[in-house]
Length: 187
Ligand code: ATP
Ligand code: MG
Image (cartoon, rainbow, N blue to C red; front, top):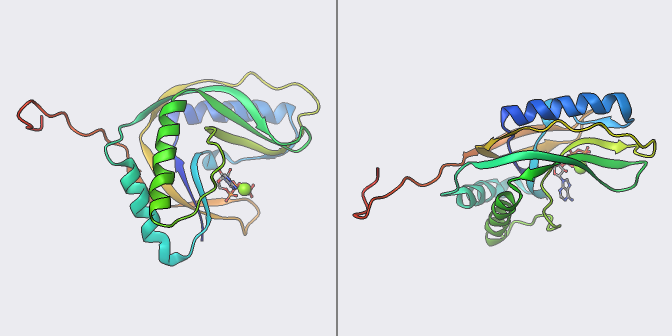
């Protein structure tokens, strides 16, 4: 199965991305990501045998242990690849270092269990378009919004249909450890 780990987006952030995507449709030709598929990838595992699914879940649980919600704010648009067939995305103005830390922990916990992942440099982004023709020039001003990322999910990606489908296999809630007083009692 084809697996990846992604941070799930706060509702206000999702709404802003929907608006940016709608504005892009007026200006840029390409393949749009469906709004119900917007996500922020932390680690891409690729093909993993079903027998290693439990290891992937355990790695995700361990990486997120003691990690509280992460405040993020949307930032500018960016792109990867060639100008006529670009991947167009919206990046973050806030939360980059915190997400990079979490992505690093996820990747470390995967590696400890012998699970491979794509080790390219982590650039937090939400893909809005693929095969985008950016040669015409104008891009819209992206909508911005902020909110807290509260869950991280292990997804199965199915590319057999007309558009990619992502199935949530395991969801982990980000919860800071409770405060302890000087005697070690939990409040
Ligand atoms: P499609 O490949 O049909 O355009 P997709 O890229 O959304 O669809 P997947 O290829 O299964 O679907 O990728 C799932 C997620 O993992 C996406 O966020 C994608 O950007 C990311 N991803 C895919 N391949 C890699 C890779 N080699 N390195 C890092 N991230 C990747
Ligand atoms: Mg892909």
